[in-house]
View 1 (spheres, helix red, strand yellow):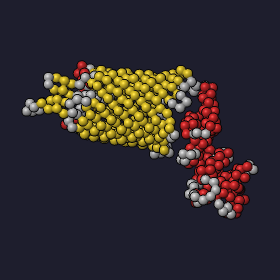
View 2: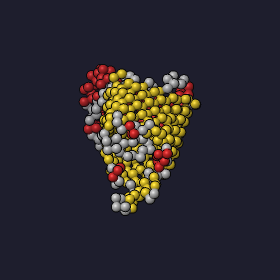
View 3: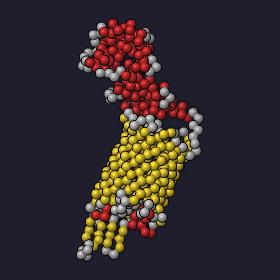
Amino acid sequence: MLNTRPYLRLWCTLLCAMFLTFGAADGYGSPSEAFQQAREAHGDGNLPLAAVLFLEALQQREAEPEGPGPSQQAIRYNLGVTLFQLGDAESAATQFEALAEDPDWLALAAYNLGLIELHLDQTARARRQFERALQHTDDDDLRQLTLLQLERLRALSEAEPTPVRAPWQLLVELGAGRDDNVRLTGDTEPDLPSDEADGFGELLALGSRRFERAPGAALRLDLLGYYRGYQSLDTYNLGMVGGTLWYLRDHSVWQTRGGLHLDTQFAGGDHYASTATVHLEAGRPFGPITARLRNSFSHIEGSSDFDFISGWQNRSRLSLHLETGPVRWQASYQLELNDRNDLAFEDAFFSYSATRHLWQLRAQTPLSQRTRLEAQLAYRDSSHNDANTARDDDDNLLQTTREETRITGKLRLSFQPADGWSLFAEYQQQDNDANVQRYDYSSRQWHLGLEVWR
């Protein structure tokens, strides 16, 4: 049955019409009769009566889906148009969103959802709906109407003054926690666990500034500073400073960007590695799903003590983004290729050049007006390019190709008492299953902290 809750705000407007037509509505023997009466009322300008009769026709059609007369989609479309004309954009959107579930009506429904978003001054959402309509329509008239709306939005964005924003967007995160198996973390990690637990403090600082160049084009500078210090195991302390300069382009459908990233990392107070990365990214919506492709090529230069991690790395990533009600989803796959110097001495050899496949699923949902829950699950499969060679206790030369699977789960609960800051609690568990004993480990982390931004 039809959910009539979205229409509650209309009932006061419609009460008079419903009272005058209640007896007549009971007399409609088929959806066709109610639909015809609704169209006549609409043609006469009696929109409240038309809405009641379209709703009556829709309820009858849902009770008798295969009967003769207008389709449920045609009735729903007319009901949505009438509700919008009555000024109830939210109820109209409900009808068009349901209509969009039918592939034959998706384009027309998306076009009307775009008109509703324009009415609500949601130009970015309107653009996405019009682009969705353009992608799915094969009707020349609807295509021309949609292109006209997109052109109007483009002209509007060029005519509007650039909004005044703070020169820098800033975020600072301060936290503390405990790790039951400390290891050296980071993007170029050798991944050696300590098999010891310790408490840690953590500081993260992010800054971002956007420089508008032209309509649809901008530069953005992102800066990053990070430090994690352990209470006792200070050789595992890690710090990093870096920045990325992005060039951003917003096309009619696609959004593209390219960036140059530089960073340097410190471990135990000493220089650990420096990295230069070139990012290329493109994204566009496909109906309710937004797809993004990114390729990141990095050159890594390890310090003298970590020269074995020096070399190049390439990461290719596909991510899909979807909003279902209040829940925001992200699913991604990443292919990582490495060619490192590796570690060799005497007749021993250890490979740090791996091919990795990473699958991730993330979800974020509000629990209340000020509370948010985030969850993440990741699976990584790694295989190193060359076999490790080492002698055992009996001086026999053994060769083993290092292979690993890693599962990581994370939960983060955030509470925002006021604008500009929030508190968070985070739990992470990681299990790394490896055929080389020194890399076979599990780790659990508890983390509490404060975020401040402007």
